[in-house]
Length: 352
Image (cartoon, rainbow, N blue to C red):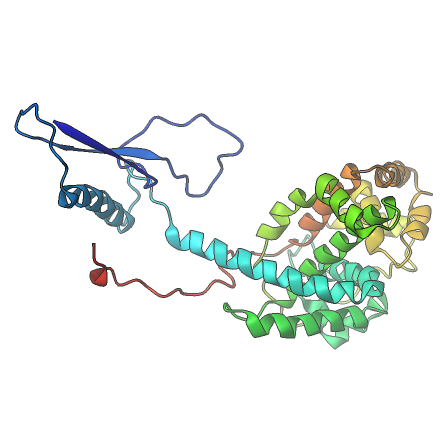
């Protein structure tokens, strides 16, 4: 008997023993490697014979046919795990699109660094309209309306909104999956602005040397913490301004008023302290005010110490985590947004 084995990445065709549980194996569509053995009987002869190409292709074709049949089964089979190819394609499309968006925002923000504080506040105020009781408001792009951005709490944010609008025009021009929502773009702008501040901090620690600063941030920065934020991509824009009175005027609000607003949306003193850069153009002045409150001061001091370290890990990780949560308040994420149909392959024309 002549035996030929093929290593395939097709999903398992027969039941397999459960894999050991792991925090890293949480894929929506787990795929197990499987060995497919195609055995060709030579009639009992001890003579080694060559395997015909047609026999090999028949074996592979049978495995693929089973995969295609399984994928069209109306109800899940306990014996077959099917990889959703369409889902993988959509993920790649969204990832590529998001990468292009970040490049556009990076270029725009680099040329307008003075707008970084306003960009952060723009994202914060768009999110802070969230009402926990009614599950309404939140980061839905409502701040783009003139009647909302013109409110006292949004004074000085028009230039940041103009930057977002200009970026949107460029992004929409190359988008294959439709126009990007303001709600997505405003939060991604805040992400880009934060990355710019993290990088600027690393460069300062390297005496202003950009090359060394980039290396420092690459080695010790918290870029890997953005994974969850990046997946929350597919917010829908509201078609009307959010109600007035939901966002404090940060320049006039007391620390107690700030605390109460953060508590109302599910945050606390820790998140208030780490978001100090979003609360006004002068972060140090804002932190000095927050430090007068006994509930907040310990967190202010913690993050100030963290920013003096090489990695700034505590500060960056908590800030990224808070922004990620804030950027999703009350939103239903469409994980298929910005994906688009791909040209289908006519298998009947394939020649083997």
